[in-house]
Length: 227
Image 1: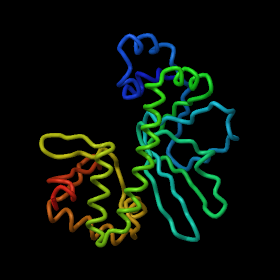
Image 2: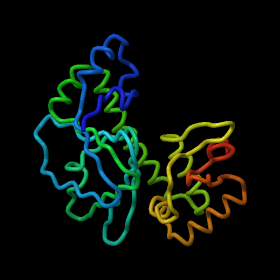
Image 3: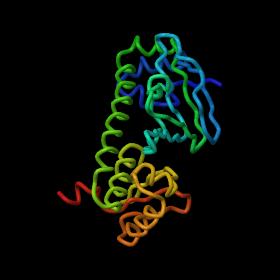
Image 4: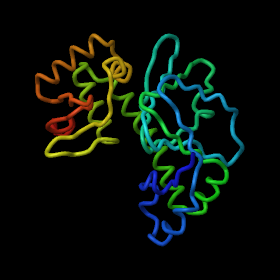
């Protein structure tokens, strides 16, 4: 399967002139790797130089890292760029990838990479994606040092909403279905404690759960509320 990148991810071309977008639309086509639900093991060898990585154009993944029994998680969703052969091989840690919603990855091989790099606006857009992931990991690390699980979870929800949420009639909808177990991994807590904290946030009216499993945030982000 293949995908026109500028249609699958219009944000890539947000700074390109319209005439350049029109010229590239049918030319910038990438192979697509489809991943079903479950564990994913990137077993392919390190690609040839010039391969930019995999751009997630649909779905949701969880990247779990374990060091000496301690675990952490990172959510990867639409618009994220991953390079597993760079991120995974650390001698004292183990990494697992889990597909939480069916995923489509655009393969940015050397041919696609050459086209992208011929337009600095596209290269800059991909660098932005990597920077956002780095920033997100830093925020996760800071969140785990907050006192009180309710506060950590609320900060986590608002951070995820900043990346993937949308405003709808005065609330913010986070269209990602996260179990209490996954939230515990992201917030550095056990599932029963997460369940209790979610109950407290719900009673306070800070969050609600949609019928489709998505999360709805009410009021202001924690920093704004305190400022």
